[in-house]
Image (cartoon, rainbow, N blue to C red):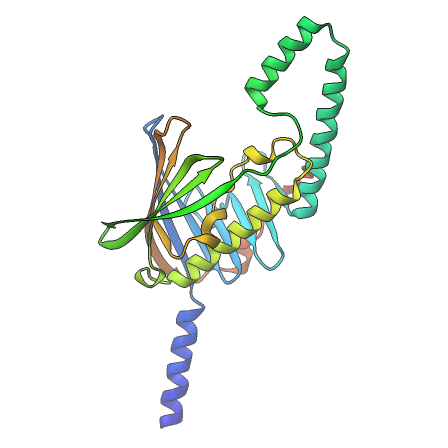
Length: 266
């Protein structure tokens, strides 16, 4: 009898530990005034994000073990796979194209060249060699309570400018918190590695990498705010409901009938 009870308890614990979960987020854009929901679905090492809140229509799939992400375009019924090799190729191609453009500009009359440089600087920023942005994660010590949970504020400072603000609660305060945190951290590490692999891409330092700071934040962000160059809040995202469920592995693959698109072929 004791063995049966022990076995039953272990099964219950295992079922809880490996339960699939969905997490809902609500994002408000202060520029447009629009508010949108999106859902993240987590199954083991697999993660899918859907803006339609439908696991059958994911917009992005991440496979931690395979170290790849799949971006899906439902309007074109296409998808493309992002991994380190792919991003290195894209970075190399973009760098070569930029060098060719700069060589052509060197042959232009001075006035025309200055005009082109001014236009391109405004649209593309620094077109020289990529420089890795200096990113700082600061735990401020400022505390509050959001949705009944104690939180502490973290600030993300990029090249001296505050870009993001996280109000973080301990993992233990969130249902399935460790599972959710692990998913966030894995995705963040993957995105950071992708950007690091694009060392030849002139604009690599300007690319935003969502979730990349989670390896430095010990907790779950209940509230996230994005800031513009003037320190004004542009977006606010709230961490919503977590629901346990069971998802088929096929839900973490591109929809049937969708065509693979090679992003390295321009």
